[in-house]
Structure formats: C-alpha cells, structure tokens
Length: 241
Image 1 (tube, helix red, strand yellow):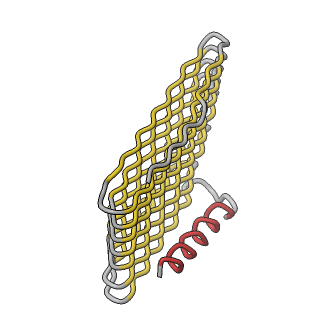
Image 2 (cartoon, rainbow, N blue to C red):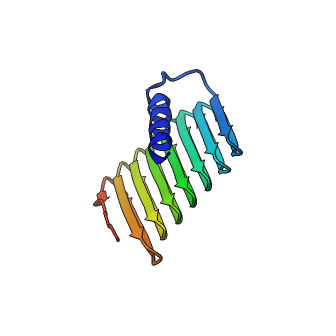
C-alpha cells in the first residue's frame, strides 16, 4: 500500500508541476476515500496564483490537504499540497504568498506532502515573497513528512524581501521520516535585500528515525544585503537515525 500511495502522490505532484499555467486564480481540489477512509481537500487561489490540493485516504485512514496561493501586483504564487493515509492520519498544508508592488516582482512556490501508513504525518510549507520598489524576491519551500506506524512532523518557512532594486532569494526544504518512531524537522530561510544588494539563503534538513526514540532537526538561515552588497548562506543537510 505504501508503494501505491507514494506512486499516486508522485504522479499528482508531477502533473501539478507540468500543468500549463492558467489564468489568474486557478484552483484545483481532489479528495478520494475508500474502505472507510475520510479525505478532505481544499484549494484557494487569489490573484495571479495557482493552487492545487489532493487528499487520498484508505482503510479507515484520515487525510486532509489544504492549499492556498495569493499573487498580488507583479507577483506569482504557486502552491501544491498532497496528503495520503492508509489506516492513519495525514495532514498537509501549503501556502504561497507573492507580492510585487511599485515596479517590484515576486515569486512564491510552496509544496507540502504528508504520507502515512498506520501512523501520523503532518507537513507544513510556507513561501512568502515581497518585491517592492523595483526589488525582486523569490521564495521556495518544500516540506515532506512520511511515517509508518510512527509520528512524523515537518515544517518549512521561506521568506524573501527585495526592496529598492535589491534581490532576495530564499530556498528551504525539510524531510521527516520515521518507522515506528518520532521524527521532527523544522527549517526556516529568510533573505532581506535592499539598495541593489543581493541576499541568498538556503536551508535543508533531513531527519530519519527508526524505533521509539524521537529526534528533531532545526535549521535556520538568514541573510541581509544592502547598498550593492552580497550575502549568502550555504545549504545545510543533516541526517539522524
């Protein structure tokens, strides 16, 4: 069953990424439940945005997927969320907010996936980008939580602010995976750039556990650049078993 859920979720996300961009405010929501399962899916798109949400539940499992995307001015937001549960509980939330104002541009891309078999999986992904006064901001966040008979919690927040011709880029990714244990992964990447400066923040965390012992990974990266300066933070990767 795990292979079926993983294959289905992979197919759904691939279709979401490869789908041709539509008009402003494109939202898609799908919920599938079988054998006593319960599935809830919501998708909201406002402005220049695309939002897709998919929930699949089987054998008494509960899956809830929520996706929200807001694109204002010269900003584009893309949000994708997938939750799949087989005799367990899966919750996935993806949020993308892009605001490009006063000559600025912004892109926010958020992806969240939660899979479980007989356990609990919670995944949250937030991407926020603000580009104002000819600034440019790009935020990407990717969160994945998978569990087999355990508890897995993953959260990512990527925030970028570009002002006065500055360029800010934030990229965050987290993976929490467990087999009859507890795994938590939390990542935050923040970039601020102004006055033609450039700031780049990259943060990654991978937490894997087996057995009853719980592990937690926390990664935080923040950069600021102003007056033509440059700042960057390397990618962090950590694995725990």
